[in-house]
Image (cartoon, rainbow, N blue to C red):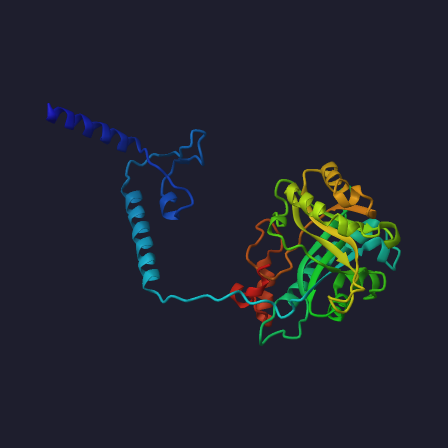
Amino acid sequence: MNTFWTSAILAILGANVCHGFSISVRGASSLLTQRPTSTSLYSTFAADGSEYSSNDSGDMDEEAEALEKLNSFDRQDFEDDAAGETVELGPVPMSKNTGNRFVSLVWDRLLDTKGRDALDLHYDRIALTEDHVMFCRKANLYNETFNTESMVDVLWSLPILSSDLQRVIGHAMCMESQELHHVQSFLKEEPIINMLTGGDLTEIPIYRWRHIRDYTLRIDDGRFGFPCLCLAMDDEPEQVGNLRQEMKEDTMEYLIRSRKVIAAGPLHLPTEFKDDPSSIPVGDLMLFNAKDRADAIDFCENTPNAQEGLYKDLRVHFYNTLDVTGKFVSEDPLSEQPCGDMKEAMEYWGYPVEDNQTPWLNW
């Protein structure tokens, strides 16, 4: 009887091997999935949670051998890591330009000195996007021995979209620097501002931005919606009195409970010193996620400050994002001009493009 059942089991196992049933872990290793065969069919992920592969070859030895190689490779890596020297990492250093955050707002139609129409302004701006990104990255990439004269960090640059989402109508930039005049000098050289005004900053508003650092107001942009910008400017001081201070706690609670906010904070007059009493708040800047335009407007109009009449002007725009940090962490595979080309060029010029060379850029 035992001999009979043993023979039956072996026959069943042999039949399965002949039919070539196997489990394929896709993406784990090319050794497991790239097998020389003429009729290999692979599914990605079945509805029942299983992954299935069909192969006309009945030989499973190659897969078993590949799996053994992979396991032995992992064990070797672990042994090497275990035998390596332990390095204690210290706190991430702060940028030498840390101290003050400033926001500039560029509205193309208001600044254009050449009388271009909206579409021409859009195309002229788009043509300068790469120059703008490069300009910001050059400011961010410095260390103790290279580009030490850079006195401004560009935290973000956001192209602001028209209401129909078809054009870029301006941009908002957040910069960090020890002194206001460094920011002004930086903006005078920025390519898009030069295209619009020739470097004249007279009509470009610059504010000191007191970014609220509460960790609950750091939702990723684009999570559960589309990234939006709200620019809310206060009414005249004699009209609002102490309303902003009175609504501070209610506003904070509203922002936290919304679970929409990417970053937010009041805009102050850009005095030379942060503690200057004349640097009074004049508005709010909020970056947040919204499902659509109606949701964005509803969120902004229902803030406690807006409900109590603090603002005289309230603008809501969708925006795009530009990677101006210079970290070169990821590359867009769909881009016609991958970031790798820019990284290679900047590395050739001497900029510290590797992640460990500029740890303070981990914003």
